Amino acid sequence: MIMAKKSLITSSEMRSVNDSVTNDTSTKSILYPPRNSQSSKLWLWITSILIIGVIIFGGVSYITWNWLKNVHVTLGASNTQPAITTFHVERAGTYAELSFTVLNAQYATTFPNDAIQTGHALVRVNLHVTNKSTDQVSLIYYDVARLLVPGRKPIAPTNVHLSTGPKPGASEVGWIDFPVTKSVQLSTLKLQLGSLLLSETPLIIPFSGPFDPNHFAGKTTVDNNNGVTVSPGFGFDYIRLIINGYNTPPVDNTLPHDFKAGAHGVVGRVVYKGPAGLTRLDFAFLVQVVQGQNTYSVNL
Image 1 (cartoon, rainbow, N blue to C red):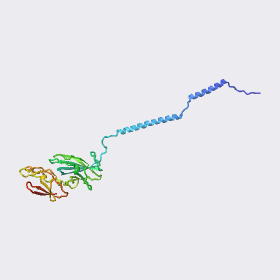
Image 2 (image 1 turned 90 degrees about the vertical axis):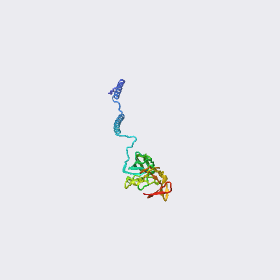
Image 3 (image 1 turned 135 degrees about the vertical axis):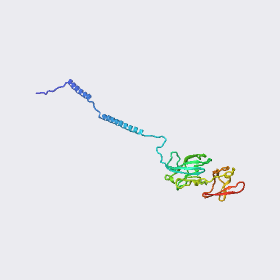
Image 4 (image 1 turned 60 degrees about the vertical axis):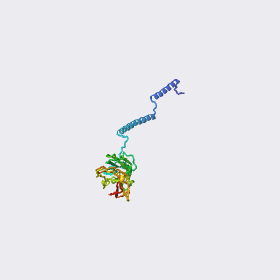
């Protein structure tokens, strides 16, 4: 009878084997630690984003810096100036003993030194005003100045850069602004000086076309051919305008009270209120001391 031989492993050998297996496993664990692939990819993305951000920030900063160097800022002033059209006139006339010369007319949507505007645009009339008399003459341009535009009613000023009148023997330069539409033609305009409400004969200066300045100039002077001083009084006392057969006294007078012996070319203004459209004026000079008058006629 044959018996199979079996190999027996003792307990001490089992421990040795287990220790050997345990030691191998821990050695492998130490030499080859487990790797986390998701964390590595996350850090790679973060690093890439930071690098790209630094590049973009640097580029934007460089572009912005160069742009700021080329920017010029002006405080308190507009960078755009409206276009101004100028039409030269150089025409003169006399009103209220003042000599008015229209230097030129200008058109613009607005003027920098005029903040008052009621229309789409402005026409500026530049004037030279001279007082050649020995009297102080005062007038209100808002009442007597009008811009005449074809097909429209007379236009009153919105702003005036002139005094109420230069002193005797003095002159000044200034302007009057009128509100207009955008389609106005400067060559067709006229400046009117004089109050129609007060029945004044106005001075009208067209900016182009026929113009007779002598039509509006004063033509009357006073000469004293006597060898003594004559004192007729003021014009209120002895000069009358005959209207419809009645003697009408003046409403204003600048003639002197006395005329010295041998005086020639004494100038004065006597103003009357009468109907419009007169072509002939009849003046009555009252005789002093006794009743009576001398009549003189003037054709307009």
